[in-house]
Image (cartoon, rainbow, N blue to C red):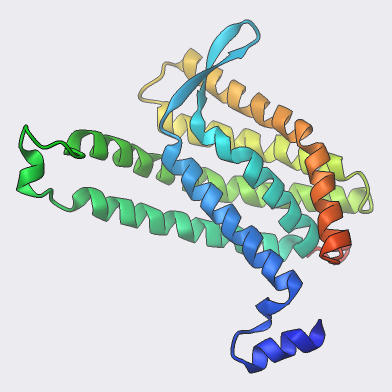
Amino acid sequence: MVSDARAGGQNGTGVLLDTRGKLFLTLSALFCTALVVGDIIGGKLTGVPFFGEVRFLSVGFITFPITFLLTDLLNEFYGKKAARTVTFVGLGMAVFTLIILTVAVAVPWHPETLEPEWGGLTPVPYDAVFSSGRRILVASMVAYVFAQLLDIAVFHKLKSITHGKLLWLRATGSTVVSQLLDTIVIQSLVWNENLDVPKLINLILTSWIGKILIALLLTPLIYAGHAFVERVLKIEPQKPDEAT
């Protein structure tokens, strides 16, 4: 493993050619993609049955199980410092996406696309979708950094307290705390002008409780993911005193 890493460095490709580096790169790329895609699609609200009534839920919720698993693996196998690095890389990708969307919406349409007989995409639906995406991205960036850093801190605190045991507790516990903050901030910033207070509270509670339930349901997958990384990829998790 060490010789492979050194060989990669000598070839100018760096140590990311080893298994641990490849996994980190893959997890980071998937995390950033899920984060940005979730923000772009989040402007659509669907309805879910919840305690006898149909409640609001953003479809951005689709990416939550993915980011939940990825955050746990990054925290567990690469430690607090690496998880924070991915957090700020994710923020950078969100800012980059916001810039691209802003430019894309601002670029003028070709005159032919404004004619009534034009059968392709038109300004009204395009601008409505991507302008909404920009608003969600801004709100997400505000909520994301604080919630993600809180998640990392709580995860490693629980890992230290339990001496690296009770994986489900630190994975779910950190999510319960951080996602409450994330959900309140992002839903309030995105929907405060479109939903009255009762509906906004409805949306926040549904999203937050849904995230907790998913976190609990994904516990077997978390253990399976950890087993795969440790037994197949032969990568050891960070010890509590190393996860800095």
